[in-house]
Amino acid sequence: MDEKTDLDIPEDILLRKGARKGADIPDHIRNLLQSGHIESVNLTEWLAVDHILLFQQVAHELKMDAETREITERLIQMNELRIMKIIPTIAANWLNLMEQMGDKKRTRIFRSLAEHRSDSVRCWAAYIIGLDSRLNLIQKLDRTRPFAADHHFGVREIAWMAVREPITGELSNALMLLMDWVIDPDPLIRRFAIESIRPHGVWAKHIQELKVNPAMALPLLNHVKSDAHKYVQDSVSNWLNDAGKTNPDWVRQICESWIHQSDTQHTLRIITRGQRSLFTSNPY
Image 1 (cartoon, one colour):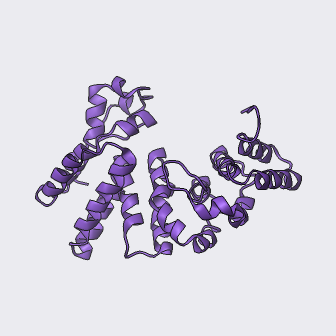
Image 2 (cartoon, one colour):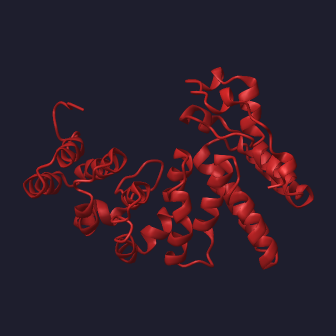
Image 3 (cartoon, helix red, strand yellow):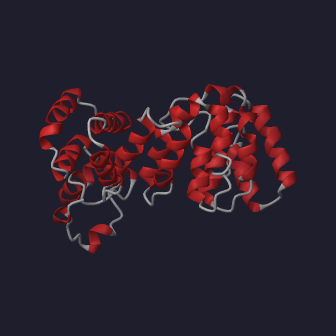
């Protein structure tokens, strides 16, 4: 990005906890979020970002006001506020713009989005990868990896959502490709592998094949059945909880098998949370 757009943000702003309600976000924080100068620090702020205003700001930074004017008008007319609709919509528009550029400019623009200080802008970049029909599944997963390991929670969530449809379209191939991800040293990468194939998922279409036959994913799940990182444990247990909605007996059988194979505190936590919808009471 142009260094002239960078601001010296006070430490108290960078270290803020964030408002619990959107209405309580201070105006100066909201303005910094909208201008792309700071990252959101919690879900409330993340959901409060006006992506259309942010799109205009980023286009101006990139000196692309003229090229994006019609896009901005269409986005305003859409009046779409749902974050899981507006992010892919903006990403698709960036992708269409970049397809009209030469390779050098296309690379420069994408890098500007992918390395932007705003987590919301990096979310667009992640979705651009998922929507790019020129890329095969291997390429999409490879290029999504930096976003899967991003330091910001929002970018990590969008990363798996962005490739959810390509993964579903080539599920058997995806499950093989993700085997390397579940044994990666980075827990963020391991978590991505499990989250991206949850049968139900969050804010995402269901994967019908895994709802019917969850055993397809068992080779991946076995690698993380006793993962030491809570972030991964939560994803694995949520996967089991999803599967239990359509295959409760299978989930019970897997949990019983796991506790015999790996009688650890980590496995116990995973299987307890994973069966929480099957229990009459939930101790967690």
